[in-house]
Length: 266
Picture 1: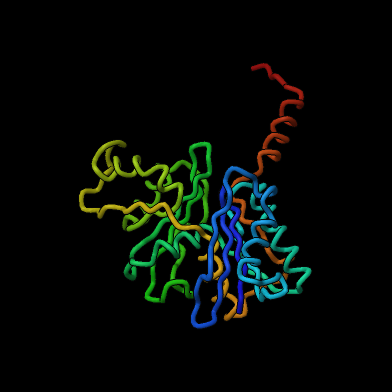
Picture 2 (picture 1 turned 30 degrees about the horizontal axis):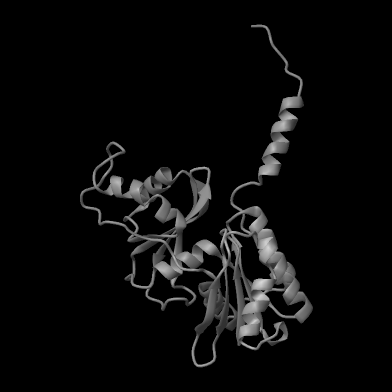
């Protein structure tokens, strides 16, 4: 089975070819050109990858895409592109959470019962985050991770504090959000700010990893989903936004500003 996988949750994103011939493996993964938008680069980056392997879209058996979270425009462009390919080729699809993909990659060297946290830069000094505990299952297999805290968006310090209160400190924080706020986590773990009840001297250190390109991981996870019969039609792909669109918030604020102000006498 050949899988074409796409990630547009970050500015650069990535595209990958994955195959189960001779074992599950990433044939090639390419990072996108972060100086251009996804709308400017797609589908040309995908076509170029296929051409380099002398393949056409009709040679792809399964289309996989990062379902979010991420920028609204990036997600819409990426999902719509892959839906179009799958629809024309009458092929199934799989949507994979970018946070889950990061956590799988970060769990590679972890032992059962250790925790891995995925952080993506959500801008506005926030992170998209999810927390998982590792099981005894093999990496990229169903059941490898158990979700402890589902996808959220919020302040990184508050997120890390909530996780500390939920149990053991994550062994690894992975993703561009983890890399961005590595200094904050280091201060917390070394006894700097914030004030008590932090830090816990008995807690192990948390390792920070920037995270890989995600398209390859998404393709490997999609293979596992396909083997379990967990594919969907193109219409079945649902984006994971987490944060409400700016346009929706602006519309609410505009409506609130137009409402008549009613003053009441005491």
